Length: 409
Image 1 (cartoon, rainbow, N blue to C red):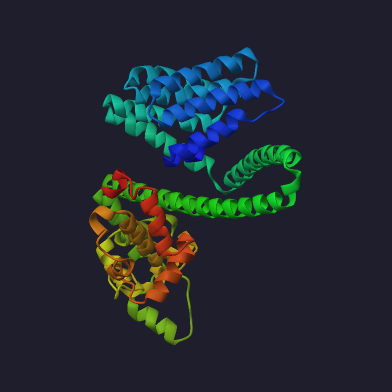
Image 2: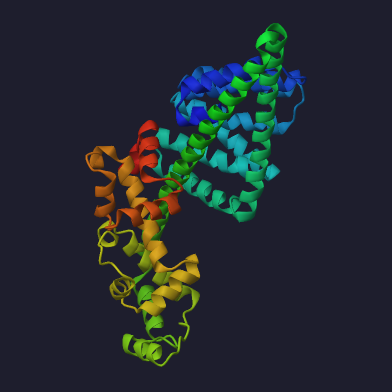
């Protein structure tokens, strides 16, 4: 139900809410709590924030009444604060979120703290305080980066998979109970009924799982685009914050670095059969990567069919050996892979931006970012995104295209 609320499919969300509400369980306390919590979530998705606050507050009272623990009651403060933001009461939201932030800091609950930073960012944004909004947004992003490293991500994915399995098992159990009751009533049709039900369930579940997976891939791609935009903004801020003298010092350091080859020396080394590894320190590598990514962020540049590693090296005043080594050591991939990812990101953005690119075919969009071969484009798109361009376009239309903030980038 939460997934459908987040994607805006309120009809499906209501349907699953009814299923959850009618589902029987031996633990009546948790049942009462989750019924109230689900009602609040559905009300929030319907923009009925006052009703959402009511249900969330009742769920909180339920958790405290039954002594269910802080993990149940404290988690509700954040969604209550978000509801007050929706009600245009940012001051109330700030008071609640600030208290929650202090508790999260004391308990060391980093997930709760990250969510609280995000709520405070929204509240100050609604209040018109852009400085504090940006401050708490920065804290949220920084904390999220520390939480979702590879190890924590795998643990989180495993935990959520376990939760999803339990929900699926309960749903299957519910369906089996209903089928059993029907079997007792219509014994004459039991065999045919079971065959039809199993076949239908498999088809529906297969379709739902496939579309859910595709939607998840689209959401992940949208997150990657946003992260790319945030990374670009951070690079721009970093470059602006660097003094000219410091930038010149780094540049001069790169030019004088031991083992630095000019184009002639590089050609001689290749001709002689040697492949000396470039020698750059971390600061020099970081500066070169900043220059590389600034150029790769320029859509007009990467969309050129003639754009090559040699051109990139020339644009940043270096040579192919250093540029290739910096890319490989930083990202673990070669220039071609990095270029393809940048182009495909732009393709997905244009597919979603129907306002400006809706009149173009997928093939035309692909050609506009530098792909002449339709076969190569489709193969590359599917390898990076996980689905074909046509399927991505279809799902984008069903999900309402590109969010306004992404379209403005």
